[in-house]
Length: 488
DNA sequence: ATGTGC
Image (cartoon, rainbow, N blue to C red; front, side, top):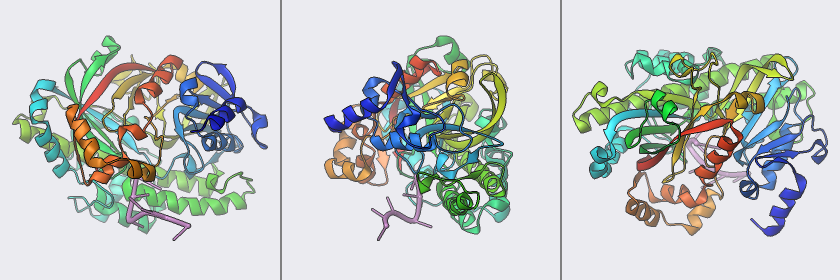
């Protein structure tokens, strides 16, 4: 980024405090509320002009509440910024596929183990190879499962619950997922044949891009008490799965963007950007999108659940110990790309709003009824993956998040440069060797994937997480260092 | 992110 661009960004926004910057309604015509960026001055310098513009654009949408928000990892996306949070009044507001993103319920889960670094490190390469072989990855990768139409339908309806009941997991798994692993609003009849045919052969596949399957260890504990509640302690090995709804979610988004572009016109909604296509939340078009989106979200939960089962299979064979003995419990599973109908207190009044989190994690506080009973006292686990070779974090949600961000926090590091730029300047094999020298085994479909996802093309996950911690919208519990990574 | 791209 050039010096001029940096200056430009700073001059347009107003500092509220060290981690909060506002885009005034005077920034762009039609803004109904200000934009609000939760970011340090260091990270603000890296926020692109387009991200600010997109945040301001979101602020023009009907029924928006309080602020159009951007998290410290924000970058530009389709219409809405990635790292964005926006809540719309159920009765007067809109719902928009661009506010969720193409990868519906792209998300993260973390599984703990009883293994130590010493158990795993000497055999890391071999273990990663086994995981890579067990979980199909890459663009267009196909599942080992041949799902029937009925099974696909049940997965759209019941998500992780379908997977567990089909033999891919343990009953307790669904209790440790956001929404218990499925959104009840799902209606598979609102999903097109094309989306179905793309989703049918992809259960239990990782996908590509920044999606990964990672063996990690707890290298720092910030909050002993909460870590204990999550079953985490220093030196312990964990497994993180980061992936989404594959071709199914992608097709649902594409289908409904077209439908909602027409609805935008039909309902006379004026948009600064066509990519913000939306419909009144309670309109037929809006509700149909919501029902299809929920089905896509459920597909992603089913996907991560099937992968979890195969990960457990690999570990039990590899270490010749059963799942109970290995202590491979799912800690939690969060959605990073989803819209939800939630109750929030706005200006002292309880209200139902459609909260769009696109590249943002729900961060509900202690005592919230939607937090699983086992975590009720400490708040929802907030899972923030790092980029390849960089630390990931477990945090917990707070009351402050309910007050400031509709119960939301950031979702990860966020790119600083494009895939194309990374491919031009970086060599995958060199990066793989550098990571190996740091004790991190990476197995990918091809070297170019490693170049595209190099640590240097991402913001620091540490910096991003520190902002949400300082703001107290999520508090750090542990830091996880990667040891082995399987990627598409 | 994606049976990757106007």
